Image (cartoon, rainbow, N blue to C red; front, top):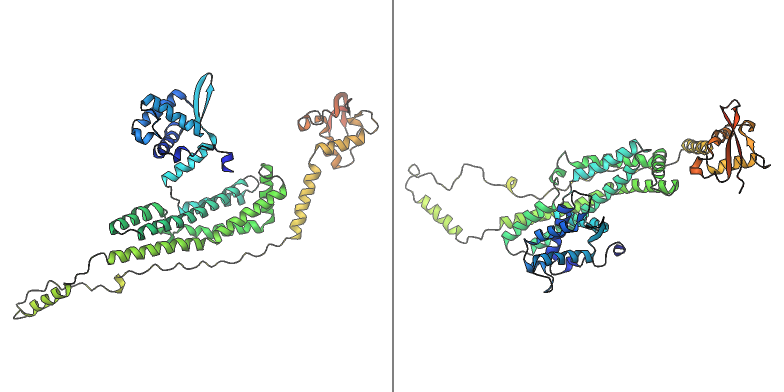
Length: 459
């Protein structure tokens, strides 16, 4: 739950009568005091910064009630205690000096609030390229860059969430414009809120041949190819397992397939979200165009003035002496090409269904052979214990020169016996004791100093 990590009173300053001042102070503290440093601030410096910030605000804006002190020194201490009690700040001592820092969980929340305050827009092209770059990096080097697949899936989810939020913001602005009686205020809302704030920076490029969605087919193709390739999926899963991002190889493989499927589903089903945005934009443009067309009041005397002008022209005695009529123009009249036309619907992108992935027996046999080879060549505490227990069954110590190496499996374990006291962080040192003896081992497999192994006395 959210409040198992955050203080119960964390939002209290943001819901009090002085919430505007409190929010501004939090953003100021994040950006100016803790923006470019990792070290906590001395309490005296922090209080001085609060006092400087309070100088630009009135007492009514700072105070929650009549108990808030008016004196600047006492007031800054009261403001500091307000945020400390709410859980935004953490106070401790370093070498007997009181220092102040932001609470770790509250810092994460403050970052999101600051991003919301800035009203950051997202670029369609930038978001698509983020997913494509991370996906290509993961599939090009799956053994070492498997985490790039997780980054690609996260970028795809963030982009989808941005599109949904964009459509909701547009609908809210549309409702505000329709509810506005003043045309000037409606136009201001349209251009300042709808166009400048809520449309993404490169929205218009979606209708050009350089639109960022030309990379979408590359994302679908790359994700589909990786999902149909068992070796790529296995390599990505092994990388995630080796780096500790999965509990086991099977769980890692399920995660890899889920992330690839999620990327495919998002970018194959993106059209319906874009259609919603395009419909809202087209609807708003039609309404604004209609408002501009009918903005002026109808002139009921226009017909009478036109008839009077025609009578004045006809009353001239001769056509040769008549002045050129100012009401006529040499330009072509306005016609259908000049009238407003609704936006054309985007053509649907033709997609091909992905074929069902069928396992190749040769690839499955190759994967099993690799697993068997890795099992036989990997030395574990259990394999060493089983090997030594067979040799020490009679209870007497055994020398390395007396151990008979019959096959490669035995040699793989034998060559590590000389390190048994430090192998696996000394996990076997309590069960077996290693000692150096004179002589050398020469058995056709290797040539090294001789040694002796026996069970530890307390085992």
